[in-house]
Length: 339
Ligand code: ADP
Ligand code: MG
Image (cartoon, rainbow, N blue to C red; front, side):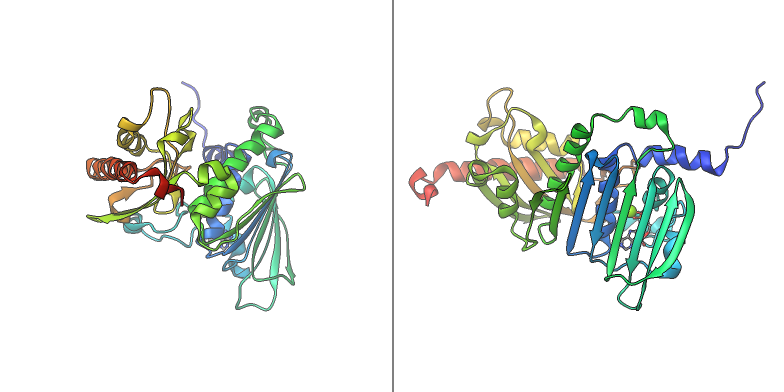
């Protein structure tokens, strides 16, 4: 029988990192979630070469206390939960304490952070999971994280990345979703030195949809805002004339989290059943709020999948209210709609 080896910390960390960090867009997602969890209202994201050579995320959130910084890079180190009971009502986007340690294991990372309560901040650098430098510096309140040379020490993973332009496209998609899921946060997104988009953070979702998708779409939307039996659904559903050729415009957030859910996707399409032709798909941007105890987000390391305790209730709520809103709009004479 082969000998059984206990893997080294370095090997364990690289394996674990692979589950969270698949590509530059996954790094940006984790850093944005951290910024939002830290209460940031202004976030700037800059990438170079699709995020492979550089990702920089700057936020004006709480910052991390100097003394806590090395701890933040340990695996399973989090300020967001403490016990398994806390998993029952997660209100933050992060909770697994895996992102910073995973990203640091496969890149050259630098963090500059300062809390409101401290006079000075800290600049901390870590490469391939090994601490390089820590020095006291002057810094604004908040956090900046620079991630350079992603996968420099995991060549196989690096080989599976696509061309920088394609990787940059994934980051752009993510930025759009993040902006739409947080209309109250001002985002600036810079790709290879060019500002790609900017949102004001004034809370107006339709304005963000306009900036991302343009006038034809943003002027053909039906607002929805419904609360019933513990579920709240708000946002916009597209009029049937702007139906799309694929599903990538069925955009929904549950408790602020962009997820993919078979049940929600089906409910949306069921709601539109009478209003879409075959091989066409609706345009929707919907925010759903449900009791955090009715949803399990601890399904997968990337947190893109969730489970609902009462799927059928959610399904019926979404499909029925979409059909109702489409039907009511149909009854209003077109002249009034043009107003
Ligand atoms: P998680 O988000 O699951 O808690 P992370 O590895 O992403 O785990 O982050 C570890 C901890 O570092 C967080 O719990 C938080 O306390 C702190 N942290 C990370 N990023 C930021 C940030 N941008 N602002 C303030 N604190 C942060
Ligand atoms: Mg996190």
